[in-house]
Image (cartoon, rainbow, N blue to C red; front, side, top):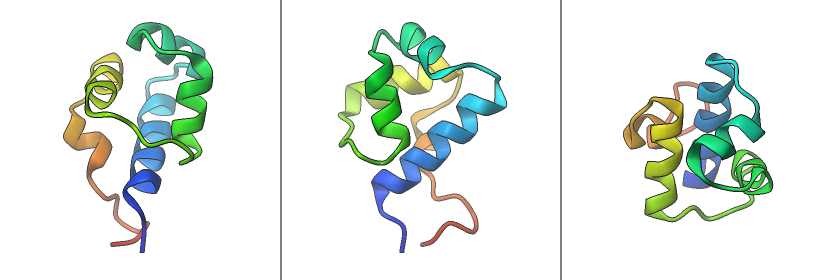
Length: 75
């Protein structure tokens, strides 16, 4: 079973790489630090609601897209 942190990590990296931006670029767009984005992508950080919205907006995505379990990774 996949945890919510793992789901967020998977979706974040998938969306970020699909639009061809680095962790640093995403961090700049979201107003967050690159190491924060890195730790979220590794599933090592609990992410607050406000930051989920900031990250989603920076990706041109919705918070739901970040949190929706992806087919084949559990749940």
